[in-house]
Structure formats: structure tokens, C-alpha cells
Picture (cartoon, rainbow, N blue to C red):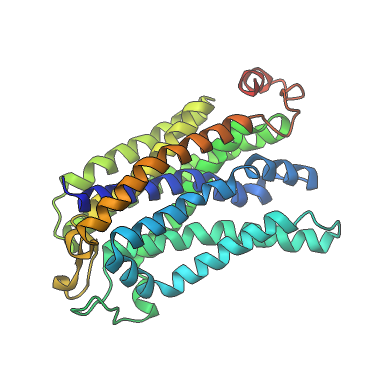
Length: 352
């Protein structure tokens, strides 16, 4: 296996890690208006992700940096082609970060409502735009022989790419709800469990349908065999189905694990469908960027491989420690003591 392929796989892993972790952050933000009844509820919901959300975004920074270092031609073409969408994503991420910090800086109702709306809107907007951006890599963009984008804004939106955005929103909302079932107690727990069962009915069929569509797009627009992308597509589809079953049976830990697998499966399907290219050109397929053609020089790949081997385990260990420290439930007391009678038995063991 060449270093180019290793780094393509590693970038896929980094994007999977980002969506796995930031996915439930976005999901929590989406669910605030549905689950919160007052400011105390809203504070509790934000507390579930408050200590970890900024750490989760490190995966995005590393994924972008790794793309620049390992595949500079891919980075340049992708960022210039998807400039508008990526700019809007950046606005969403900034608004969300500012809302986290500023929402509680004043007690005025209008102040809190403004930043709450900003947080909710950004939590919906960023996943929707991420789905569109990554789906365009596979569906294809008009490129010339030098890899320059020759299209317009309208070329970024197609039924497939818009569907990708909607599916990511649904999947992340489902993922966020399963996370909240693990992290809340009392009335918030009950509402989160109800939301999980409802979202399962939406996210499962949408995700399965989109994964099948992605395999078809890979065959049609990227000249790929169906078997490669079908493997993670089937795994992701089974995972989201199992998540739906587990959520209805009250197996909250397994439900969260399965939405995590489904999220990784969605990302893996897209990257597997994309290989051996990193960006498909349409209508001139010959102008597509390939893994080997977009990669940096061998020496550069060797250097960043050593750096990644040293620092990646440290980042993973640090984040694991962070989640261990901030593992307590919220909304019903840290030990789950005031959880409702229906949920107290499950809430207490997970809090210790």
C-alpha cells in the first residue's frame, strides 16, 4: 500500500471521527427547541456537550490540515469549487461557537433568544451544508484540464447533493438523541427517549435509501464497481436499523453505538465510492483528480506520516480522558437520583 493510499484512508478516518463526534453535538443543538421547556432545560442540554464540543472540532482542523499537506491539489480544487458552501459552513461554526459562549453572558430574554436561535440554526445549517459539500466530490463538478472549477453556484445543487444534506441532518439528529438518552436524567431523559424513537422512523429509511443511491452514483459517475462501496453501505444500513430497534427496546447504549457506526458507515461509503479519485469531474470525466495525481511528493508524505504517528494517539487519549471526566448525567441530578421512576434504574448505573 502506497503512502498516497494510506493518507487517503487516514483522511477518511479523520472525517469519520469528526462526524461521529461533532454529529451528536449538532444533533443536540437541533433538538433543543423540541426537548427544552425552560431555560433550565436548555442549560442542561447545552451542558451535555459544553465540555467537549470544541475538542470535537479539532478533528475538522486536522482533517483539513491533512488534506492540505497530503493532497494539495485536492485541497486547492475542493476549496475553490466549494467556496460558497464552505464559507457558509464557517459562518455556521462561528455562530455556534459564539452562541455557546455568549448565550449566558446576559439575562435578557431577547439576548438569550437571539443566541439560542443562532445556535439552533447553525446546528441545522452546518450538517446540511457538509452533506452537500462532500456529496459533490462524488457526484462531480465541472473541472478543466488544470483542475480549475468552471461552473457556477447552481452546479453545486442537485437532487443527490441536496438529499445528502437532508440525510445528514436526520442522521445527526438521531445520533444526538441517542447521546442525550445516555447523558440526561429525569424529564429530559423521557423526552429524549421519545424523540429517539420518533427520529428512528425518519433517519433509518432516509439513511438506507441514500446509501443505496450513493452506490448507484459511484457506478454511474465514477466508473466504480458496486462491491467496494456496497460493503460500508450495507454495514451503515444495518447499523441504523439496529439503532432503531435498540432505541425502541430501551437499549440506549447499543442505540448510541449503532448511530455512531451508521455515521461512520455514511462517511466510509462516500470515500469508498470516491476512490481511486478524490474529486470527480463532470461532464469531462477525464479531468477528475485521482489519489496519485493530487498527492504531495513522497518526502512530504513521509514526514507527515511520522508526525501523525506521534501525535494522533495523544489526541485520541486526551479526548477519551475528557469524555471520561465529563460523563455524568444532567437534568436530574448528577447521580440520577431524581430521574423518573421509569428511567431511574437505567440512569443511576451510568452516572457512576
